[in-house]
Length: 95
Image (tube, rainbow, N blue to C red; front, side, top):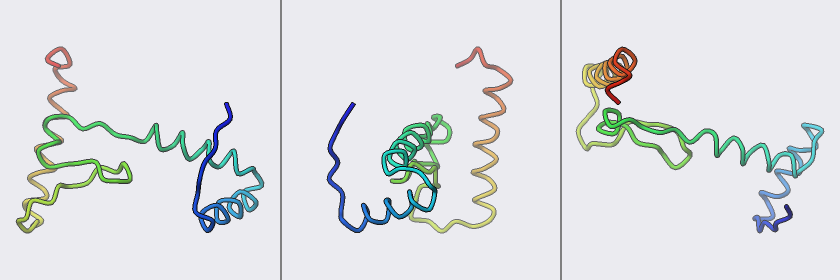
């Protein structure tokens, strides 16, 4: 399928140069980037949503809560998320 993209000149030139360095085409670079973006979108479980969010680049990150994150708080949150994952794997029928 053919489509038209409007890109900033600088981004287009950077992508073309990148394609040349990779010895591929601009089209292939766009296809690979789009596939990677679509496949990389993670989903969060309800337990993770309490402390985690998907950032603008599709990367899971800790939510900003306004309170400072201490090493103890970080470990507690990771343990709660991992505990929920373990429970789901041990009892898959409860989903």
